[in-house]
Amino acid sequence: MKLSFHGADRDVTGSCHRIQVAGRQLLVDCGMFQGGRELDAENSEPFGFDAARIDTVLLTHAHLDHCGRLPLLVKAGFRGEIICTAPTAELARIVLLDSARIAEEDAARASRRRGGADVVKPLYTRDDVQATLERIGRVVSYNEQLSLAEGLTVSFHDAGHILGSASVLLQVEEEGRTRRLLMSGDIGNRGRPILRDPAPPQADIVVMETTYGDRPHRSVQASVDELIEAVDATLKRHGNVVIPSFALERTQEILYYLREATENGRLPRSLPVFLDSPMAVSTVEVYRRHPEFFDENAREMVNGGSDPFSMPGLRMTREHDDSIGINRIQGGAVIIAGSGMCTGGRVRHHLRHNLPFERSAIVFVGFAARGTTARRIIDGARYVNLFGSDVPVRAQIHTINGLSAHADQAELLRWHAAAGGRERTILVHGEESAMEAFARLLPDVPVSMPEPGSELTL
Ligand SMILES: [Zn+2]
Image (cartoon, rainbow, N blue to C red; front, side, top):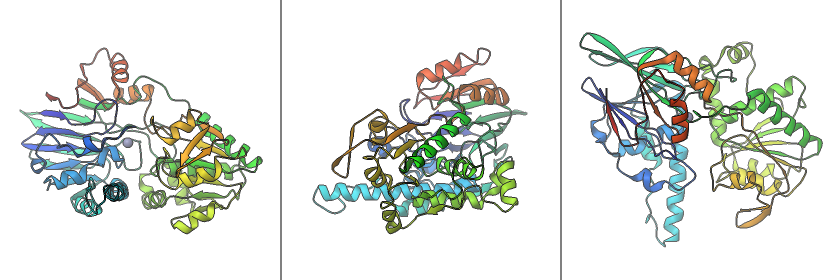
C-alpha cells in the first residue's frame, strides 16, 4: 500500500491524498488550496499524478478545501466514480457551483481590465462543475460497506464536522490478513447541535487532521451566551446586528441558537432575522431534506413537527431586491450574510449601512484570515474600504471564538484513542507546531508527519 500526499503546504488548507492499493488508485478528497493569500497559481498547477488513472474519489465532505479541485480533476481526464454521502453530494453541488460562478466573474473582470473578452480564463466553469457532478456514483450511508475491488472495501463513518461529513475506512485483504486504514477527513466536536458526535471505527493505520492539535477551544456554551448577549444588548440600543457568516454549517448553527433563544425567552419571540444569502438558504434546504443525518435532539424536533432552523421573525432573502430592502432597516434586526471574511458577497452592503453607527454591532463567528476586511475590523481598524470609499467603524465589534467546526486538542486525542492507529499514525492538515505538539501526546504510537508532495509505503 502506498500513500501520496498532494495537499497544501502547511500555512494554507487543501486536502488531497492518493492511495495505491489492490491494483487501484484512489483519491481521498481533491480540495482547493485556500488561505489568506491569493492561491490561483497553486490551484491551477498540475496535480502531480495522472488524473485519468484515478479509479475512485472518496469525498469526505463538501467544504471547498476538500472538494474544490474536483472539476479540475475531471478536466484533467478523471473518468472514475466519486463516492460520498447524500448530504455531501447535494452540498458539494452548491459549493462547487458557487466557486465556479466566482471564478467566472473574476475572470470576466480581469479580462475587461486587460481590454478584451475572455483574455483571462476562469479556473473552471459551471459546465465543468456539471460534468463533475455526473461522476458522483454510489451515494452511501454511514457504516455501509462497499466493494472497490477484489479484497478492498470502503465504509464512511460520521465525522461530526458538517452535515454528511465522514471519515473513510479502507479494509484491505493482504496475504491472509486484513489491514484497516482510516482517513479522518475533518474531525468535528462532540455535543454540537444538529450533528451527531464523531464516531471513528478502529483502524491499524490512521491518517488524521491536526488543525487545532496544540490548543483548546473556548466552551461552546460560553460562546453561545456571548452571541445571545451581544444580540440582546444591540436590540436594547435599537441597533442592527450583522453576522458575517459562512453559508455552510456555521449559519445553520447560528439559526439554531437564535431560534432556541427566542423560544426560551432570552430574545424576543418575534425577533426579525434576515438570512440574506442565496447559498445559505439552499444549504438550509439540504439540511431540511436530510433529518436522518441529525442528532437525536434535532430529529425529535423534526418528528414533533418543528423546524430547528425556523422562528416566527425569520426571512430568507434570495432575491437581490429583497436584500436591498434590508438596507432601509435602521435597527432591531439580525442580519446574517456572507461572506464570512467579508471579502465579497452581500455582507459588504450591510457593513456599509451599519458600521458607522455606535448602536449597531458586528458579530464575527468564524476564522478571519490575514488581509481580509473581517480581519481588519477585528484588529481594530477605524476605517475600512467598501465599494471604493472609507467607511468609519463605530459599531460594537464582537469576536466569538468557540464555534469552530474543528475538534480541539482534547477532542482530537479522544478521537485518536477510539480509532487506534497503533501500527502507524500519520498527521496531516495542520501547521508544523500544532502537529508536533499533538505528536508529543502520542508517545507509544509510531507517528509520521509527511511533507506535502511526499510518499509513504506501508
Ligand atoms: Zn471541513
